[in-house]
Length: 443
Image (cartoon, rainbow, N blue to C red; front, side):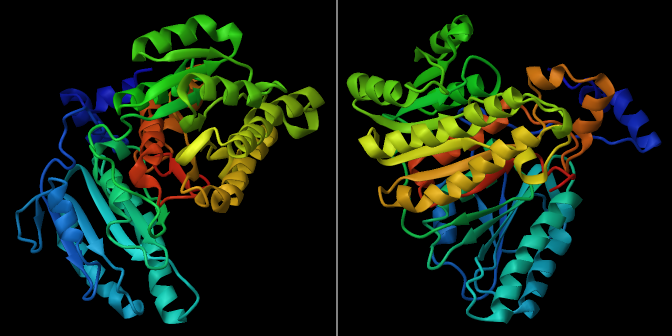
């Protein structure tokens, strides 16, 4: 659904009027197209002494042009600061000095990425500096303009630059257009780079549930674009739309009610017989039955929990028990910012999505034993059929309640899912990645 306001304030006359009246001026975000460079311009790199080995070499191998010295008048496509060697609060002044002038010359849709280490409880001063990066990146993301974003990669334990490569590529690229003010933990040694970063899912078999339209259809399309062989699943009633999606991406359609008792057996049997198993599972299917809790009927509560949460639990259990999910597999579950911040009239939906987050965190160690990973993506306000049905004023207000001052697109969620499905994202496990433009309410 087009954002007419965004289009207006980015036109010649509209931009002038918005500037004079002090109206919000959301930028047109740079989104990924096949063949795009990782970063559209130079990356200014800074570090605390004793930082990561091999970081600049890794960036060079990815085709990123880097510079170590800022110069007045020079514009930057991105800023990267390695703060992994922080030993106390006094070290943070170097980050301030690094950003101070360069931020003013950050290009539209620029990228700011900080890299730090996760607090480990060994030294209060060290942990204070490490946690401070969280506050810095979340605040900085709210200061940036013109579609620029800021995110933090948090290395756990002895995680290295190589472990962070997948996350670094994602945050620097246009694939992360609507991911802003986020902290992503990366563990050591669990990921391996794909043979081809332009087709990172080549040879993989993927299942996407709830794929007949909207976000599910976008996920299926992006996974196919990245090389996966995709099976799309949805209710029999959505069969016509499901067939259109399958035909468009060159995939297969599976009509399935994921909440049915026999759904886990149907999935494992189908993929073992036809594909020899599964590499990627995306739990996208979900429903809403919104009511105030005081007015909510049992069937509204039960149906949402059954589809959004219980079905995922049963399918994941079957995948692990049968071995249908290959070693090194990826499971990505759709949560929601409603499950993090809550939402009026959505106690059932918020319960189900918060439950997904709890499930992902609990499953992480079991998946790690198989060199696999399970994560959640939590969308914020995304332009979909559901949001199109909202009253105009309500929709317009909701669109502006993020640091990027606009709604996300289904493809933004799909890009995050595709990133977490890659071989190079195996070092990200049990995490929740919000795709919300840094929503300002409950963020």
